[in-house]
Image: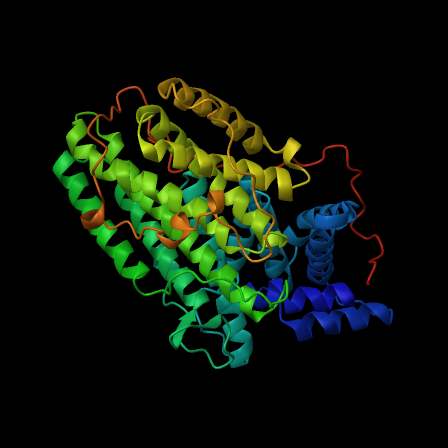
Amino acid sequence: MECMSDFFLTLNHDIKVFEETEVRAAVQSYIYGQPPPGSGWKMALNVILLHSLRKRDWTNQTGEYEKYLHNALGLIPIAILQTPDPLTIGALLSLTTYFVFTAENHVALSILAIAVQFVLLAGYHHSDHPTLTPAETLHRRRLFWQAYVLDHDLMLRIGKPPLITDDFLLDIPEEYPQDGYGMFFYPGDVILNYFRQQVRLSQIQGQICSRLYFRSGRAASTSTLDGEIASLDAELQEWRDSIPEMIRPEPSSGLIDADYSRMMSLSVLHFVYFQLVVAVHSAAFRVLDQDVESLRPSVGICVNAARGAISLLNYHQLQHPFTIYLLYQVAWCVDILFVNILENKTSAQSLQDLELIKMVLKFFEGYDMNHQRVASYHIIKALYEVASSVVGGARPGLTDAATLPELPRSSVGMSVGGSSDLVDSMPTLSMSDIDLDGWEEISLGSHDWLSAGFLQMADWGPPMNSGTKLEQPDEEFGLT
């Protein structure tokens, strides 16, 4: 019961996929020897135990959570043969978030595809359910919106068309829900509906992909593409202006509490914003006849977005599991900084970019005990070594370009090299505000700036442990 209480107080509080009363009723029935019909309740319980034990495993590395992961996965074929219900759909969405957390995006997409099929078959995208109470209808609508957000997130990461088109998005979550779900309060009497903003941002994601990457017919002309980029950039900046600036947690706040939840929610929104900035402006590099001069603004914005995304790490209590999740997400930014260092190795900014790459490595080494199994860690380490030698070779007076300040282990955030400059100047990246100084010597001819995909972030997490024994789905639960 402790695992269940922890799950509903934390993860399900921020990403609500289960109704607590429904799950607890199923547990009581199971304990008294009268389990509910169907497999949805079993999958839900296994997913709850998976997330709760995985969080504990972050510190003691027992691997106990893997049993419940495989139990839940083993129940998917059974669920396919049954009528969709909220517990099954919630469990599939929660499994999807698990694989997103571990950056195994192709696995996440496969599970999400089943969840989306169930959601649409059950009609959760509309509110016409006369036999249900308003609360039951609202929960089903929220499952649809959550599936929509996950779908558009994976669309951007992998570069695939969305499973849920905007034709199914009849409306978005209300701004002030009666139960207060997704509502957070920030300094200056600012109120943010996190869930509503997620859906709004997902709509913009869909527009970016459909207008810049999924166009049918002939390729767009340079002028047409420039117009689309400017329009989407303006829409993105308008959304950015509607959310609060980043905040730091209170020094006395606990690891899991409302204050930290509101900071994590804000971090997710800012991170996706930086993702979309890169997605919008890297589209300019897909036009072969573009001259270097016209590309300079987009290059500068993409580089600043990468810096801003990495700087989000500075805002977090380093011992919190969310830090590892955020680390996996920002790892994709390193290749942008790496290319920028190669092109501007004599500039003062190249040293700061090198420090940012070093910071990412230090986060892996200091706060992810499995970093030796993570592909992105080894890739980033190799990029850092090359970039260090390039910067050192371009600066004869620099005796050791690879020697940078150690990462401080602070409970309330950190700053690179003891300075908060990068954090305090996190860019908002409007096209009209970008500083082009220092870009006169840039050359793009030898580099494919993300033109093969959107962000090239797929599957940079640790691999599944193929040696783990596959448990039987009907194994007894350890309800602790």
